[in-house]
Length: 196
Image (cartoon, rainbow, N blue to C red; front, side, top):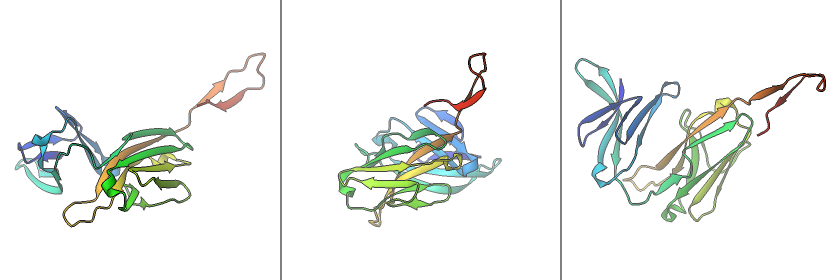
């Protein structure tokens, strides 16, 4: 069993469950699960764990990742939209907003599944940093295989803090097709894409 564990109040929230302002969703095909915590306050500061229960009878767990949460008044890194859906072949634009204290830090766009990261641009990913707090990522010619979890990242490298990351879920859907029915006035029968 996979779960989110709070050291503060010794509570486990298992995958595919919502408890108050905490939602834990499992994505087994991508080998990850996500935790969404809403309405965070200073009282939520503390240590949390992404864990796997290896022996259900004894409750023994293997920690897979440890997180130290410190709630700040404004985020150092955020995105305008954490979930984006697009038709196959389409383009998306994701805007990552960062604190100006990181304007000279290295920023990138990465995919969780294979840990591949983009710093500037290639044939299908274009990244532009305005140097004033906004990083824009444009992905074009998207295929269904591009669906998954991505993240904007700022390399902090100060020895104490981990790199800043904020997730974005990308869903690429198959293009929908509609059939125009034949009547006496519309011969021959045609198949065309539904306009966007």
